[in-house]
Image 1 (tube, rainbow, N blue to C red):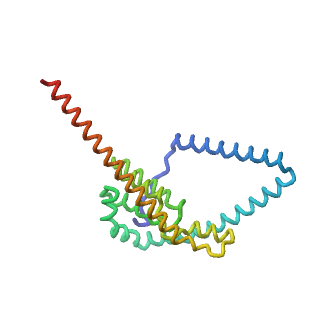
Image 2: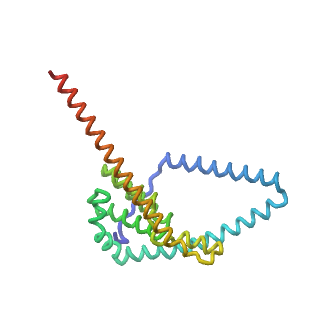
Image 3: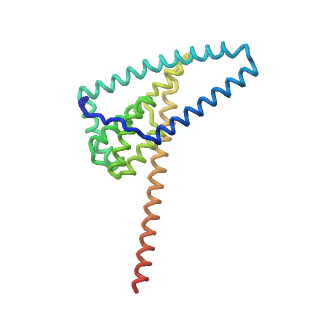
Amino acid sequence: MGYARARPRAKHNPRACAICYHMNGIFAAVFVLSAVLFLIADPDGFLPAMLAGGEKAATLSLSLLCVYCVWLGFFKLLEQSGLAAKLTRALSPAARRLFGSEDRETLGFACENLAANLLGLPGAPTPLGVRAVQKFMAAGNGDGADMLFVLNATSLQLLPTTAITLRAAMGSLSPADILLPTLLSTLFSSLAGVALLLFFRWVKTKAAGRMRKKSGAAQTEAGR
């Protein structure tokens, strides 16, 4: 978990490049179509609206950049001080049960990913989550990868920093009023997501067991 840990080199993924290429094409087409419709409906208001939108986007990006710099710097300090490794060891018993893995490095990536989600940083934990999922899949632990995906999708948040920053940037008088509603809603969604995942995993296991019994019975009948 230290800072000197070797980082894997990025590999060229043709499929990912193709997806990015098509997504860029879709966004470009949407922008062009919107611009054409705007010019038809209000030719004089097109340029002022585009400039005002760019100004708001730049202001919002800078506000989010400050929040991300603070929390990502905090995570880096945790790594360099060794506190991240200690936190991982403390969470290891629960993480091993949750993800069904004994690999300390993989569990470290998963725990850091969940910690960033708890702080409401939706983009920051993505690389950590991708590494954890890759290691889960490489070890044949599809259940662990599924669990991490569900926990990221439901995203339990103790401190929704991104949402609070957005509300503050938009002029909200009480941007932190969403703390309790966010905590309760994301707690419910996380519990529901985990429960559904475990239920469907149980159904899949039962179905596989019935198939094995039928196959064994068919082989027994064939051998008579």
